[in-house]
View 1 (cartoon, rainbow over the protein chains, first blue to last red):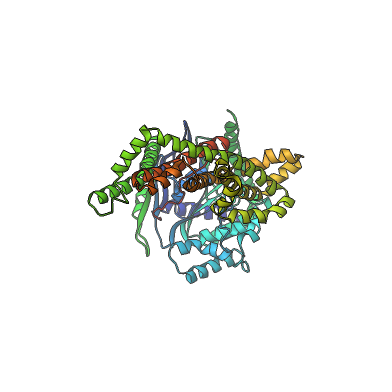
View 2: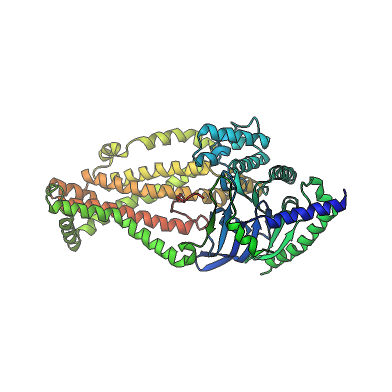
Length: 277
Length: 302
């Protein structure tokens, strides 16, 4: 690889990102859960901005509020204070959709009906929605399982169904809430690579992912937002200076491992802090 | 990191095909003052629960006062309240309620205990289930009031026949609910019992009973309503005291007001006793926080 050309390419990519319009602006967002007498502060004054077509990953020890932040972005929850602005551009079919962890696909619907669900809820005809669903099932390598029920599928296949359901909506903002957490390590790696290929073949969206997996975060993201242990604050934001398109083998590149080490040291502090009373 | 200039252009960026816009997510009423919101919410639902009976009474009163309904059959609620006051001050109402609840509890408590026991048996021993399941289902379907004459024939008009009828009703319902609850326990919990070498009785009390308890309590609430219903119905024909007797006796004397008092009292008994079981349930199953509020809410799609 010509390192100088790569560096130039990278500088270009980053400047393109800089120039892109702001997609989501999170300003002073806090979330306090009130239950009985004890209040839990999940998010404490979180602010950051990300731009169109960025792939952002929220990383942090469990309980740091990253899923809460994602739920606020998805409109499933409202902040206790602060403001989130999601700007809409372009001609996507929907403004946002979300892929949850396992089990959020409906067991009483066939695979194709699950994938078509979002489109049907938006008022599309059955035929239209199923046609879109079938193209996504093909992309997700689920051809032949259109009429199967989720219980007949393996974990990896179920997760593909959940991804297909989110992508079928053609969202401008794609939210991935620990999308591969329920999978075994091998399957997870394969789906990460598929997600990477999918993302790079169609760079029209913005994505926010939540994960515990450092490799996944670096492999997929443009930037990584590292959060502190509860109450969750933004600790550090890492740029991922690895050029796209990325080959999965980049996992073993020195720059990848260096960044991994750097992020882990910062994350480790938080994980240890969390375990102290 | 963020450049304020691009921030501004971000909001007014030109779009293709779709109108430009932003979704702004800010705290709602529930988030700004969560505690007050919760209290207000609870108060509101308490007020709303009184709405149907209050509306019914108001409409009834107005209709009776304006001669829209026949007051010989539908006396105005004020008149019914007057009759209730008399029944309370004379102590007669208390005696009727005590007689009814006495019969209910004498049948209900043994019915519940035996029902849970037999249900656990059916739920844990396939052989017991094979033998008794169909018969229990069949017996459950027989209208209990239909065999009341038979019980009267055997046990006479005394308390035994009424209590027995309640006990049977409760027993069959709770048996079926308990057995079904046992069958719905995830097999992984039985794996835990097996892996840690729990014997049959330990398994029953450490795994099966707690796992089945929440659905069992649902059946206990339903069974309580049914017991009151059955007792009151038996008191129509074979009693000289009790809420059912009050209703039927007033009717035969053509005194509609005390009759309505009896009807309202039976509804109140159902509400109160079901609430009591709810409290017991919360104490017995602290791990299963019951959420009665419906999760289905309609939101604006974004």
